[in-house]
Length: 320
Image 1 (tube, helix red, strand yellow):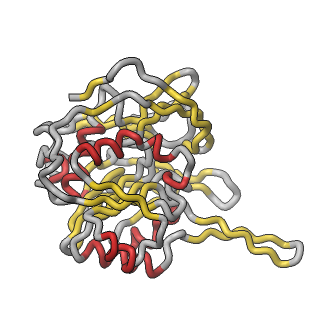
Image 2 (spheres, rainbow, N blue to C red):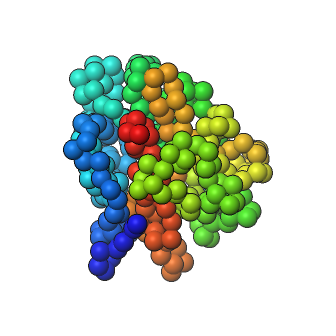
């Protein structure tokens, strides 16, 4: 059950990237998801990356993820942030049950040679970090990786490749789910009836959250990934299109596919991985588009995003 505790207080945080442009966003400060907590029944630890250019490197990043963080702590998790490199030394010292990387754009590097400037892009994750994170998961850890539409996930490509995940670094679009006049990416309303929630995936089928089956998920403007069909938690509809930026800043259609997904989860060695390409799916944000306020999305009273989040962190940390 989800309730609003009083009148929602909204505070302006400025513009955020969305589709091809930017929109204004506010964050919700009141909503609290009600659930049966597992506090005092486990000693699980969650480590959140703050060293790279994730949402938590922004001054308001933690406030936009307020309810996510509250749910983690309310469910008994010890939540830690790290400014250190995500290498084997850090992971062995902190010993997290779950590692969270929330947003991973490329680092922009400007090379100057006399009056000539050249712009290059490089993943913020070093080769050593990619190897050590992959090993950490294989040996029993878990990874919750959030990406976004271009360019909010580009920097994670080496890590995605290490887990055999194919990533389409653009905007996922389907004509049956148009966006809110804010660019090329779709706003998907996912249900089990329209086939966009995989009720057979253990994150959904295990009903870890209050014995509730998440049945309506709002997914706003993300990118496309694919691995194995059985990994799909939130599959996109058939013939979903990936719009990809080109070198001159325009948009071109790269391909359409029946295999794209917005959220996948799978076992990897002794560990587990969830990748979601909607960076805001569980944040406490409202988008302001053409005078309309659109919840993004954990506090949307018509959706089960909070149930899905709780199921996800419990599945990843093996609280079954």
